[in-house]
Image (cartoon, rainbow, N blue to C red; front, top):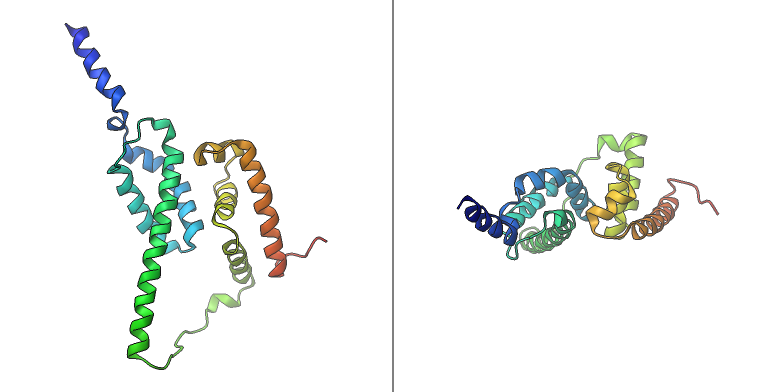
Length: 194
């Protein structure tokens, strides 16, 4: 009789493995690199927490439950990209509303911004130029470069987490590096090698 009880208990667990997935542990495990993806897409560190909160909520209340925990990383990657795009769209709408309101209330623009004191530092200037060069790259290229060099991931790690082959990762990274070098040369951060 004990065997009969264990069989039905195992069957629903197999049929609905999403019930067994500990989402808080899965999200904690993938949090750092997902934050890098979101930052690469948005370029705003203050937006990362908000988007990651949306990713967490979407993962927990998923409409079509994930049945294979080994596929969580690629699924979370797609979810982070989607939530980043939704955030960007929402910010664009908010910016448009704010701009329209500002035009009605204040017919003349005032520039009250003070110069950034850190802008005078050479290292900070170089960092800004690199950020600018990264922002000019396609989102996927910036993501790959940031994950490779800020998270120190191998090609295998990148392929596994992004759900693509290692050869695809290698080719994309090669192209992304070339594009970044060109952008850095345009911004005169590095010399043109030609």
